[in-house]
Length: 380
Image (cartoon, rainbow, N blue to C red):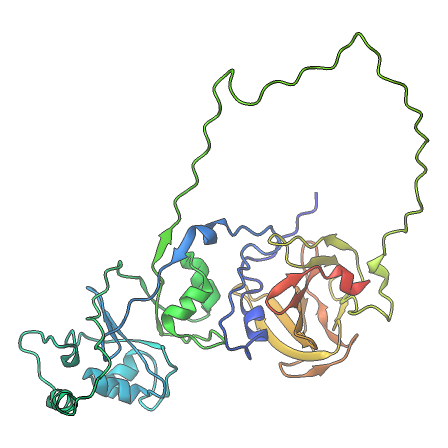
């Protein structure tokens, strides 16, 4: 029996980079692609919300502290707010002091700072009082202002999350799979950008999850209970005769042979000449697998723009093309890619060749926005 396997991380970066222009994080759960999806573990793990910060943006755990940036913050402004040296904070997070941070981006603190801060109304013993903060608060009270209530001290009641230091070659998807959390939760906890880009040496908080209680099996009914046994038909009386006309089969059109190409009227072109050896199955195989000889030309299925060219952790190339009407096509199992990110491509234009494999084949997906759809209707 022919076995088809695609690496677990095959599509991790591709779908993400293809939609880098979106404002919301992308959370394709592409586990075990090509060998049957299994999202049961992902369903069992529900991520809690990230704990609230204090007025400076600091979250304090027993083992470490982090600070959450505000819109317009730089490393230097965050360092000044928490009372650390800008160079020290930047070096610890692999940044420069003048780097601009995203809103909600998380930085790890190289050492502990006072907790909570003076503006929360409670000072640790021996802490330094920020006179300007106290003076400003007094002035507000004297003028009858109604300032927003101070944040509660950032000592979370939830368990301390794992703090992961990003190694070279890791992606947000590979880290999410490593800890069995969703990429969306990882992004929200760490304030990642829409492209989910991470850098070597960056510290990420792994979302705290709350397992869902397993469903208990319903008890089987005791003997003699349950639905009544139907009365069997009598064998003494023959069944009435029925005059049933024979059924004549209607003409059934032959299945289209996609291996011999496609009509010009089809919405998308076949990316490679070959037979479909694995069909689309939602949540199990989000595309189709097309058998073709290694080195065969792979073409763009339609006019569009190359949105992403990336590789998974096993260095398997992945290419994504964005088409009109929010349509994406994804190609995996390629080699010798002939286009670059941002290139305009035409339907039928060569984009690469089939990668060597056992057997060699191309995995082809069609996505309408975030959702995968069966590619075959687009090819007919």
